[in-house]
Length: 347
Ligand SMILES: Cc1cc2nc3c(=O)[nH]c(=O)nc-3n(C[C@H](O)[C@H](O)[C@H](O)COP(=O)(O)OP(=O)(O)OC[C@H]3O[C@@H](n4cnc5c(N)ncnc54)[C@H](O)[C@@H]3O)c2cc1C
Image (tube, rainbow, N blue to C red; front, side):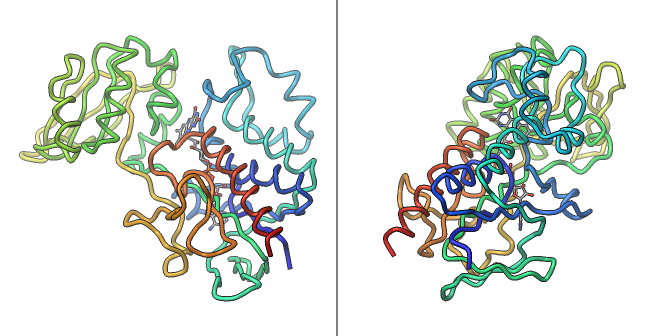
């Protein structure tokens, strides 16, 4: 039986592993697998951060030439799997950053297994985690760090321009040079979409908020802010039909269809931010752990990582539909490992 098993290989999972390994808990980390279904759901080993290019806001990684450091820090076999650095790249990429955290965790003795957990039994100790491979893992404590995947529109052109003008995170990517002083669009109508649009107005004077209905879903006060904002123009009753662009410039526009009369409209923009929600990776926990209405894990004790099951802790975006940043995921990974260590000591 393991002392602690961590499910998920994003910043939350690897940070929990660093702390658990250094506390001599000898953690086993289950990192997920690469399958077509996981690919379609943006739910791959190394997590969401590995799917993005520059990361400008993780403390400790200002712009600079990290190539020598990355060469020396990351084992050769793993480095060959990273996307190549562009000639003009500065700072750290998402894939490099998660790989660095992984390296730190494995150097302290974290063991890694490729599997997807599809079911759990938390009714008695030892807790059982059932993998898609058929393996059953037994443990005294578990840290669930399975993340939440950003929802995308599902257009082929959207896939083509991801990281080249299409993003699912304005807070993460809005300040990148490619988006500065250019017309931008946000898709969505909830609080998060309005907040993303407002955030983008710090970098540009024109943001279109595109919504499929004739009323925003956002709370009244937030919706009013969007409607009165001089840099935000709301396009009602429109859905994206196609994202336009080319290999050199990335996104150059969007083709929008009216939800009222099906008429088409072409809009020139250099960036498209999809803000239509996140899907937490918690299907395997339904009925086993308290989840919110949207499927995020409930943390019943403020400022702690406990779930409603003793000895089961959670970290990162799977329990956070509010901050959703690599640094907040890593921070709760640290907290979950400390909580697991204290729980084990108390037994
Ligand atoms: C386009 C984009 C750009 C971003 N840019 C930035 C940025 O610049 N700065 C920043 O701070 N944040 C950024 N973020 C947000 C950041 O990536 C997330 O907040 C962070 O990755 C969350 O970490 P996590 O460990 O909680 O989950 P994730 O990174 O989502 O990792 C979840 C892990 O769980 C695994 N998993 C899921 N289900 C199972 C299962 N059943 N069994 C086993 N394993 C499973 C997955 O394979 C994955 O490894 C960005 C996000 C996106 C989408």
